[in-house]
Structures are given as C-alpha cells and as structure tokens.
Amino acid sequence: MSRSEVFVDSSVFAGLHLGDPRAKALVKKAINKGHTLVTNPVVFSETVYKVMFTLAIQDGLKGAYDLKKHLRDYTFVYGRVKTALEELSEAGFLKIVPISENTMKLASQLGEDYELLPNDSLLAATCKEREIDLILTFDSDFKRIPFLKTFEG
Image (tube, rainbow, N blue to C red; front, top):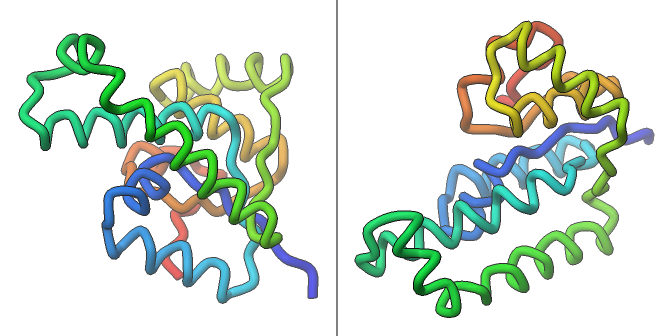
C-alpha cells in the first residue's frame, strides 16, 4: 500500500510534548489510516520554542525576555523534540523535508495571497511543492488556503 503524505504543524508536535491528548489522537489516527507524516525544519524550530515558552510560563516566567534570561533551564527541550522526531522517522512514520530556494519564493507569494505569517507560508509552500493536501494542525489560519484541508481523521 502506498502511503499518502500529511503535513504535521508545530501546534500538533508541541501538543504531543505538552501532553495534549488531542494531538496524540490526531497523530495516531493519521498513522493508522496509512499516512506518512511530513514536516520541515521550521516545524522543529517552532515546536522547540512553543514547548520552551509554555514550560517557562507554567514555571512563572513572564514572557520571551524572561525565557531568554533563563534559557539554560529549558535547553533540554531541544533534545526531547529531536529524539521524538528521530524516533518517528526511524519507525518509518515521518519524513523531514528540506526548505529550498524555490520553497522560499513560493512562500513569499502564498504569504501575500493568503495573509499568512512567515512560518505558516513556508509550511504551506512545502505542502504545495510536495502536492500534500492534508495538514495536521490546530491553527485555523491554514483553513484559508484552498489547496489544504485540515486532517480530521
């Protein structure tokens, strides 16, 4: 059976690391339906930052500047996210794809066309280049992109 690809956004990966049962159920459902998960380096960066920031806020820090002052306490998140992605990849469930010069050019156009934040435009461009039409996300901004459907299961 050929596995179709579904892109995974950082909102889902961050949810996995923060114990969100919706994220776990969504990833499990995608894998069980035979999809190959796809992501890119932007998602790694966003996931690490979202998890660090959330943990810092839970610890009583006041925001990004405070996190930066206490970054040493949260750098363990890099290894945790890297290991989780490696495990999914080694198990054959995840592909991590690069961002090319063409991806950046396409992202610029998509960002303007659909009023996306820069990282979201890079994710959308990755999907368009790879002809991926499904995305695992909790971010409603992707609903504005006509060639993408949110994976519901």
